[in-house]
Amino acid sequence: MDSGGEIRRMRFNGHGDDGVDQGPATGSSGGAYEAVGVCLIPYVKEARDRHALSLVCKAWYEIDRITRKSVTVALCYSVSPQQLSRRFPNLESLELKGKPRSAMFNLIPEDWGGFVTPWVEEIARSFGRMKALHFRRMIVKDSDLRLLASSNGKILEVLRLDKCSGFSTDGLLHVARLCRNLKSFIMEESTLDEKDGEWLHELAENIIVLENLNFYTTEISKVKPEDLELIARRCPSLVSMKISDYDLSDLLGFFRSASSLEEFSGGCFREPVVIHDEAEMDEQLGRLTAVVFPPKLCRLGITYLGNAEMPVVYPIASSLKKLDLLYALLDTESHCRLLQLCRNLEILEARSVIGDRGLVTVASFCNGIKKLRIERGADENDDIEDLEGIVTQRGLMAVAQGCPKLEYFAVYVTDITNESLAHIGRYSKELNDFRLVLLERQERITDLPLDRGVRALLTGCHKLERFALYLRPGGLTDIGLGYIGHYSNNIKWMLLGFVGESDIGLLEFSRGCPRLQKLEMRGCRFSERAIAIAATQLTSLRYLWVQGYLASGNGRDLSPMIRPFWNIELIPTRQDHIFDINGNEVVVEHPAHILAYYSLAGPRGDFPASVKLLGSM
Image (cartoon, rainbow, N blue to C red; front, side):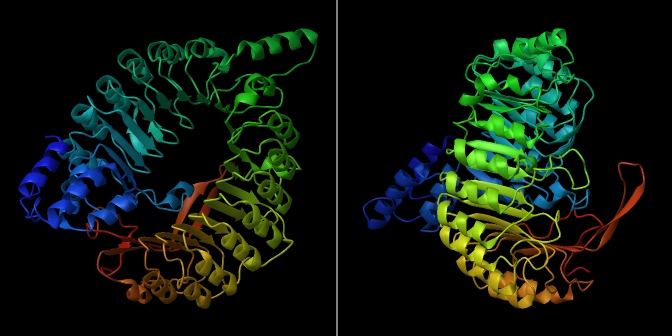
């Protein structure tokens, strides 16, 4: 039954499909109001706006229910699968997030939860129109993929397994055989058991509409380059391919066949380019020049790209809009040489080896940058990093002044000043996502605390919606923490690390942030009672994760946070025994966690022994 037909029946009968009287449909202001909703609501795409409209009256609530096509569930335990199918029976796209974000940094116990099975079962049972699925940080089993492929495979167009685990290539085989209309298949950063490469061959044989295939940064290694080439030949709409570490010299046929390709990541030169004499120079240059990228390629990331292999990028450098250097082996000077050629770059991802010199180069030659992500490099006791490869206030100020279109800026810095943050507030007016981590690489920081700089940044960047500030003790006083609360009027997600001095700062912070929905804190020595009071004062808060607080042991002081529709989970202090790179056993101490979140489903039933529910202890 199509949703348009259901809406028409509501207009003429005054009833929704559940029989609830919606009032007169015609001949009164109520009917006119309902007619406006029928014409308006299906064209509203933003979830927040749809929700606001659904609260206007029962009729508009029902129209939203019938016409909603896409939903994002920020935590899989915040609603049950059955509740979602009753509320929005005609969904075509679902994004579902499982484990907390901190799981990416091994801060959450492996057995915490996040199972996709009950959701797949409900999708198979109730969501016959589901075309796009995105599972993030979830445990996915082969049986889940088998059920999904058999129930929704004929119409499924997008399947994204983002940082998931628990499945094997046997599960991928079911998808490859039954999901013949699949346009996008993504497994980036997922952990899976690779048994063979048959799944990719089946994918190549069965699907001709594929546009995006991504198994980047996985351990997949048994697929054949011939199957990648077959996909390129059979799928004329293929625009993105992100793979694991395959020798670029084995992909020449793939590149020749992928005429529509716009994005490629992965691949490497298994044998590094080493030149000892003129004959060897000709041979190695031949290897490099043989790699000819497709003419439309504008987004690139080559694994283990070294200084000697850099010429392979030169022919397309001026066309690149995105460049991923996170896994490159370039020094600071090579970063600078390459980036001078990338004048149309909009997205750059690199490690801190890029250094201040590299960021100055970005500011000088890549003025159109919109997204800049600088991850930490090797640890300070590792010899592979360039001595120049540190990012400080100099690099931040250059980027702020030279890249006026910057929307996303995530950076690890070794040194920082208030003025550099003020510079960002002064020049980066388009910024909506800013994340800064202060490393412990050097003992003395030029200018702490950062109270003035944080205030200037927040007052200057009016479009900021996501904000992370991870410092060290003494990096921000209670006054500075209060500034964050007072000037974060539009921020919805925030991560704070080692900020503030006492409960006073946290409570002052919690009097602001009117739109904050998700708060993560680590290493902030606040009491349980202050955390509980702050959570109740943050009026829009839907999710709270805290690690490294002043734990009582049983959570007794968190009682002010107990309220309807809130689940509060505690993970007590624990120890993990791991082995270092030398094979020696090391004991890692994990401080206690608090995880609290809004839920219509009530307490979950699959929590492990490592998790304690507040109220049941």
